Image (cartoon, rainbow, N blue to C red):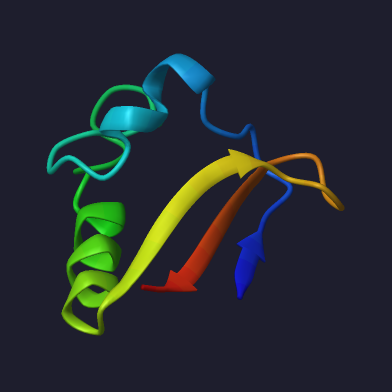
Amino acid sequence: MYYEDDGPGIDPADRDRAFTPGFSTKDGDAGVGMGLASVRQIVLAHDWSVHVDDAEILDGVRFELRPE
């Protein structure tokens, strides 16, 4: 299963820390960086994994959720 968006994406250099609490791609105080950290916790609780890549259909980011 995957989710894609048409936003600015996540720089490949930042993808390893995208799920770290406090990480945000937004400038200044626009984001608190808890959204993807929360997603990761939910995914792990269900014995799945989540991976970040470039979108294949849209122009943003792609999150792939896979059962482990």
